[in-house]
Image (cartoon, rainbow, N blue to C red; front, side):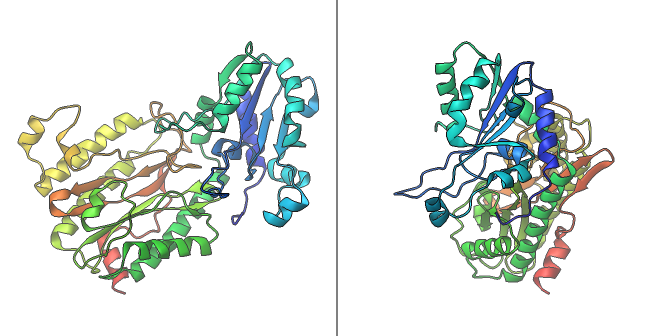
Length: 429
């Protein structure tokens, strides 16, 4: 790993909080992610399952965590299973966790090789009534690939059909939504690295540069600052491409007079930053571009002020929509008649701002959390309004990462240039 790990006390506390939500006489089992096949004999770069990482800090494939607070055997109350290393693995793949290293990273004293899991499993199952298992319940997730957790569920239910099976995901969503102080530090580091990359881009961009060259500059800055890379595939969208919300071709020339929409973020310690800026290729906005930019910025500032304890995401989005409506009226993009005749299910402003303003952020860029519950201190959200004018070949989006506290919103990206004047000044320095 490139990053500096956080203290194991975070993982000890996370496990305590999860166990406090378990029914009596229950066992919980968490699996690491699959090693995803690529082509031939290759796999994609491994990324640990966020739930397992949140509970253990172990960043290695083929890992299993067991929590069994009521275990009759003290050594089985918390168990960590690791991939067994060998001389061959050490030569070909490098170092793997030793038992002592895993204990130090996670705070778990009972560590076994994963080869021992099937021998210990019957003891766990025979002395428990309820079994907590994990599935991907992120409400943005839709996929047909059967992953490790699903395969494990099928295997376990076939052998042990009479246990009461419970969902871990709702518990994990509630726990992970509230960030600890050390988690916030990791997020802040990811944001700070993203800031460095953005400054690098401001110095680099000029007419004729290719989108992929900008992507390369960002990647360089991330890696030289100990990020594991991008927290999601970066969007480098110049000119009309900015109107494609998830544009990722990054293969076009950036032309004089156009605006580039940059949506990228570093991943540090498995925590994600998520930044969007829109910058002029020529180093100066046209009057129209500046008007649209400032309209988006006005919505962003109003939306950030709404990210407070007690607000609810769905209501928040409705209120942000009202602010956006006024800005679009001012830009002449919609009329009062459009508003009067609008479909309440798809308001007039949605023609130019068709996505939500905020999503949970943390170990995943689209992190888990309950969007129907009031905001709590410790939540982290993005704030990313945009205006997309396809007929003008112009798309502007701005985004910062916001921590909700008891004293109001805290912008984790407050040091990243945002005002149009500041962007221009840095590009022309």
